[in-house]
Image (tube, rainbow, N blue to C red; front, side, top):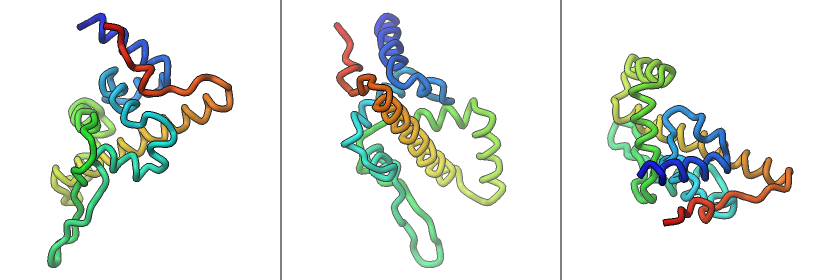
Length: 150
């Protein structure tokens, strides 16, 4: 297991090394996000990436209550784990959570907003990495890079 984790970390670090520097992102969640992205043609916008990950907002309002919920029709991704980790251990996220609670938001609404923000930032990070690798002539990262030798 540790050998596989080291190999996975090396594979992920070889692509966008900034991905592992994000709070709450480990080698497994980074690999899962890269596989979900799988290249510049699959997700053309942040909204498409969020929908693929099941974190795009849908209207769920009724009567006088105006609210949104998450679209659950995406593939499972690691955004939930990243959000949970950030809410427990990342000081800026704790401050954000406390501020939103003071505004009257529920824990569910705070998580929804946080997941969408995480998805947006990861999409931009991977997109930037691919654009810079195009300019420098490096090979583009794909999900095939994450295959581990058994």
